[in-house]
Amino acid sequence: MNLTETLIFFENLLITTDKKSEIKIYKSFIEILSDLKNRNLSDYQYQLIDEKLNSFEFKTDYKNKRKQFKKKLTDFKKFLISEFSLIQEGYYTGLGIGIGMCFGLALGASIFGAGSGMTNGMMFGMFIGLIIGRNIDNKAKKEGRVLKTKP
Image 1: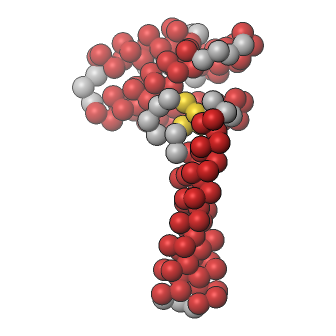
Image 2: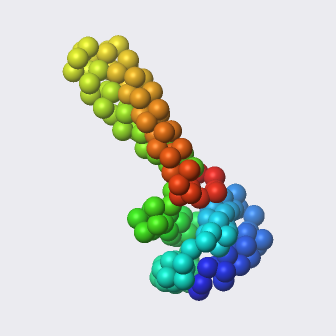
């Protein structure tokens, strides 16, 4: 399946389901595929995307569609990050907050001791991670590496 066929496939799935969890996954796929279709990518890049989409074997009849398609969506997002450096909005912000929280917790506990030191360190780390992540997200947006989708 190429990009257009996969987009049509998910639009048809969206019409035929009434489960909110499946709808969310199908809409995510549709948004990402639509954005990719409207980008100025080379023929080679479209070929890579088509090969990846073919490897997913979407038309297989799954017992638990939501679980299988969610896994494939995660794999596809990882593929876009690794091959094309395309990210979703807020990707680095979330990453920065998580990493900042971990480092802040460790530093706060080691410097100020348990209790309020851990809490203050975690908050400070989250704040620093938020600032750094937002800056990297803004840089990626200026470079045109952000997919126009909801996270």
